[in-house]
Image 1 (cartoon, rainbow, N blue to C red):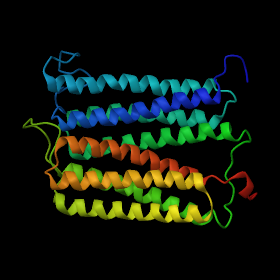
Image 2: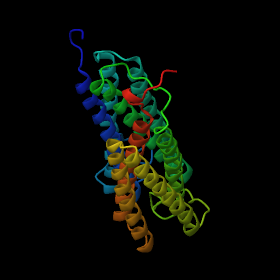
Image 3: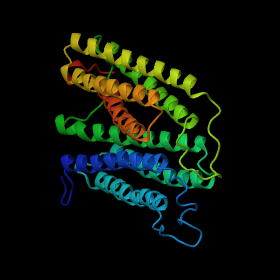
Image 4: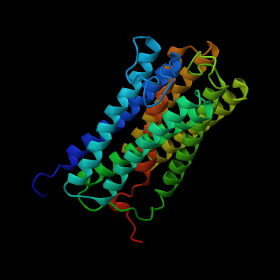
Amino acid sequence: MYRGAISPERYVQFVRGALWSLTVIVITGAAVRLTGSGLGCSDWPTCEEDQFVATLEHHALIEFGNRLFTGVVTIAVVLAVLGSIRRGPKRRALIWWSWGLVAGVIAQILLGAVLVLTHLDPRFTMGHFILSMVLLWNAAVLIEKAKADIADPAPLWMGAPSDHDRPIRNASRTLFVFGSILLVTGTIVTGSGPHSGSDDELVADRLPFLVRDVTRIHSITAFTVLAVVLVIIRRTHRAEKFALREQAMRLMTLLVAQGAVGYWQYFTGVPVQLVAVHITLASITWIQIVRLAWQAEQVPARDRVLV
């Protein structure tokens, strides 16, 4: 390790900081929408045409506070990039994945501007959230890749799975696909329901779907994801992969909690407090899906098959 290098353990801390800042801004962004503050600042990049800083009106302060937190996210992401460059031993893959965070944050800033200028069009709101989930995926994978040579100093590579790994891998890939679909259907439910983000008469129309119908599709997808997780739990238990089984058990707990909150909010008229909890759990659940799917893809040293 060269002089001034950052240790692998220290770098993982940097990336975790980026991941959690990206998670927090999802929650602050949800707070903007749920408090009707989406047009608290009606212009971009200024809050108003001739005013950069928000007034003391609470909607403007909430929206402006969310914009300011983008600065925290930017710092965290820049640290992840600089850390990947200064890390010892240096790994090119980590540099590329950290730059992916930078690209995603820039895209989020631009999409946020479009969202304001289109008066909170639900299609752009959906895109804003999905892009946030892509960033969480990027950061979660970056953490897993950064941890790889801490536990195993040998270069990490992915070989062909042995017979008892293949079913677990296939199930984890299915989990990732349906987990992604679950996010998309959730955004459609959100875009079709209340909480447009503002009470302003200029706010864009909601999506032309019945909330009841899209909620059913979302629920079916959620039950499918839960079923796949149960399959993974069973297969990891039979294969004696207890660390992976523990990750699957954590995911199952999150999914059950998320489902309970989802039904609770649906049958109580979608109160903002429960929606906020639902969005927070959605972010954490997605991170856990990514972790489980990634870890299931890794081939243990004793099971590696040279290809």
